Length: 458
Image (cartoon, rainbow, N blue to C red):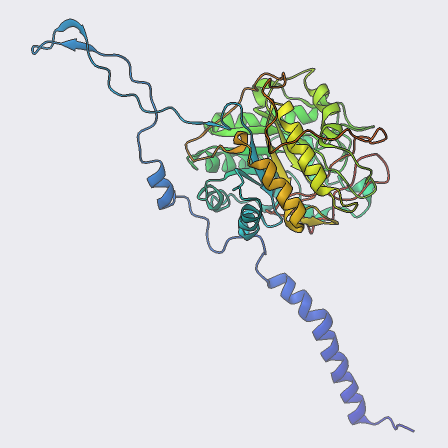
């Protein structure tokens, strides 16, 4: 029989302390003191980087008026002078008749390797990179934009007034964060932070897209009118308040992206949330094929067409699909991508699409399979996606005519097969990271759309 002795008690106590430190105390200490996975080291710079100074060194594009010739004394001679060559105007983005193709990744600008892997797999460099920044961060760091723009990619930030760390695990309470109620935004409590961002964006020197407070027609974010004690009409008030602060700061290179989730039963009516064409440049939409719990096949058109029709009842602004992707759980991802590229030209008012290239409960990545990569590469090779973005591009803010083009479809975008009669529109989803990217999540228990994932992803 084992005798209890003082040395043995001391040994057992020491072992218990060692185990506690190894498995409890040390992980908590390391997590608390480890550098943030989505952050740049050191103080944020304020000056333009050298590469940007060089890119913007040429005179700003201006139209040169025709001059009048003069005689040697300086008096007009009556003969028109040879006009000085006018500098080219900024190239529109996307090019007329075209559309840009962008992506959203898990780490966004903090790790651009997935962007390069995607570009290699589909033989096309994305034109836009979307990523999320939450208001809890309280800082503006131009490096999150410069690191993207330097690669010839337009930054689009999903700017989110909340703290994802505090997101409730209870579905109905996910949007409950009183610190970020719309009334507090309207009342000016965040004005100092918003003005800091407005000045920072103004000083970038190139255009960016700002997807502010997206998916507001749902219930899963603190800025939704269905959550957080918010009231009807406050979303528009908050949007206009933030927009006006940017306008007052002279931050005029911002493309304002008003971006609801695709419409669904029990969603807040879209027209009641729209700030008006004077406050919106692009309309964004989130929608996915194969969200957990809604796996029945639905084509691109089936997912987005019903909401597009509702949008056109109150605005003709250009549309960007700000989040989309497809599951391969039934082996249909390549088919869905092929159909997407076949159907996109039928919507000339859709000027861009952003693919969620990450794993979040579902592997949404194009690069997950050779078949999906090949389907995407074939579709994106069409000339309408060949445009490029530069720091001197002029974002297109007027939608092309909505009538389908009369030209036959590109060989790279074959006609889509007839959809299944039983297929129904599905919904999309997003979650967020401090400065990473949004992403889809699972089906909610209270309404037809999904819930966003816990705050540790997306």
